[in-house]
View 1: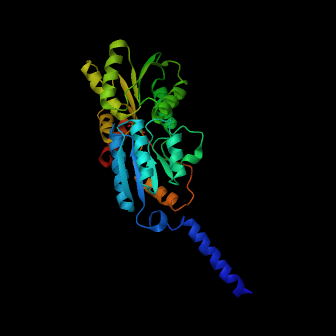
View 2: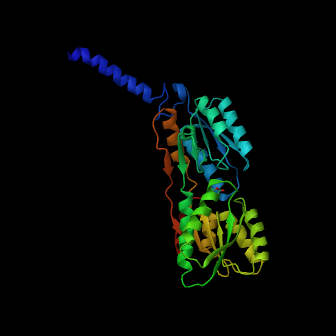
View 3: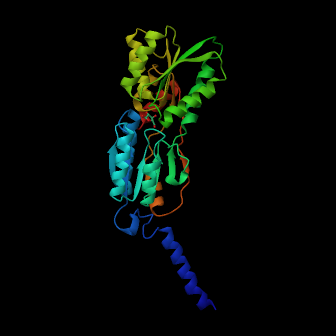
Length: 327
Ligand code: AHR
């Protein structure tokens, strides 16, 4: 009896092993689909708009190398049409997996369907897409941007206690981008708790230092009483500092500044007293992305959402954290 069962059981184990390997690829070794050669990943990056983005690109490139994954990398210069072109070219090249950080939330269904029909798994990293069809991608690895906006607003609510009027100007990220939409929403939600806080102007600075500076210059000209700047990233906050100083005011004192990211230059400005509070958004997504890529190429299941762990920094915490800051 045992003799008869055993070959069947062994066969079943072999079958399970084969299907777990997705037809020959292997999550542990990082072999590409079909088990031949290393995994090839096509990565469509947003651009190089900020210190955060530069650190994210470095993280992805270094982690791919360490994981033995061949990386095809493209920079979309913040343009959706460039990202779509890059994804189509990765589909044509029959890469094993596509990863991308969508510049804006909407307008991806057609190209993602093309990838799905070509049997190429897609991983969203950093930013999400706004699509009804969740089967168009395997997983989304990145921050909770609404929570980041809330943390920024909660700090301001505490800081505004006992004040009768707090006028805020908001420097938004790229129009239509998930972090711009969500950070605005989270902040607005949190500051409802303090009716004296009013967002008196809100405009996009496109996540760049020059954009932040330009918009802040215009805000300073048209608004005689600005108490606080809420910038959706450090770079725009750093641009705002330049505009505030050029207007003869003291950033961090005359006008308080709250930002998101905690890249090195931002944390330095916080330690120097020019920024008042930073909500961290980690760009170091490379290692987790490569692990997820190996799993999806091997046909293994992955969680549909992987949320990045993040903290916040006061001026005192920034002074302590600065020497160890990796980016
Ligand atoms: O998507 C993440 C955001 O994009 C970062 O907060 C910002 O700096 C970057 O440009």
